[in-house]
Amino acid sequence: MKLCSNCHSEMEDSTKFCTNCGAKMIIEGDQKEADTASQSPETNDSSKTRGNSSIDTQALQNALQGYWGWLLASWKKPFEAQKATKYAGLLTLFLESLFFTLGIGHWVQKATSAATNTANNILGAFSNTSSSYNNSYSIGIGFYLTIILTIWFAAVAMIGVAFLIHHAVGKSIGEEKFIDYLNKLSHYSSSILLLTILFFLISLSGISTVSMLIIILIITLISIIWEIAIICGVVELKEANQLDRIYGATITVAICIVIELIALSIVMSQLGDTLGSFFTSLLNGGGL
Image (cartoon, rainbow, N blue to C red; front, side):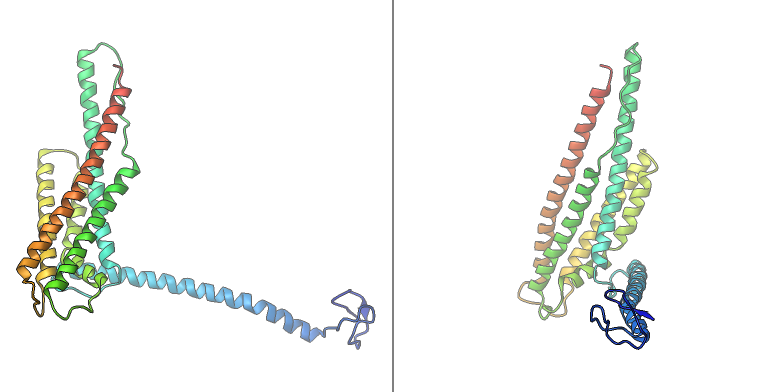
């Protein structure tokens, strides 16, 4: 006996159509094949998903290894630009902006803590009360995001200016894409990443005369390396055009200085807002 798949009535094994509802009876072998077929797409989809996941993981690992190899090559021989993953230059500029901003934020945090301690010492020396200023001021995430994005966009904008001037002073370079040019200049200036990491590590050590001198030296080196990379990106030509490369480099540096000043004004404005917020918090938290 077998059951009708439609109305579940019992039928003889030899019955081809249900005598109750008229539905076609499915043979046991056909039912198994149908079940297998219905499960196959899910199994295949699952296999494909696992395969894609494996491919994505492997691709990510290869990309990271390729980027690390590109960095090592750039530190050894900066001017011999190597082929890299598409966004190696953008990632390098972002990491440089990130570590530099983290260093600035840590310095500001230490400065606010030192100012609070100094204010509490002065308050304790001239007051008999037990009141004190709040020492728990912390910098918001907006501070970090603003400075990171400002530095990053300014760097990309300056490379964009160099890219345009480079095309103005050179011939037969129209096939070069901006992202490739950005990777090349990031390769030239990749030692800035090491300097920004060092800047961040020094900021963790605290505020002292020696650390301040080292910080000034690091910022000076960063500026020099960056300007050299930008100039090299303009004057490195196989064939010159009507605009002389010296004039091209001069125009590029002048425009980049304007971009740097705009970025600096944004950073200083953010620092001013942060310090203003700190002093407001300090006065409100004191017992005066």
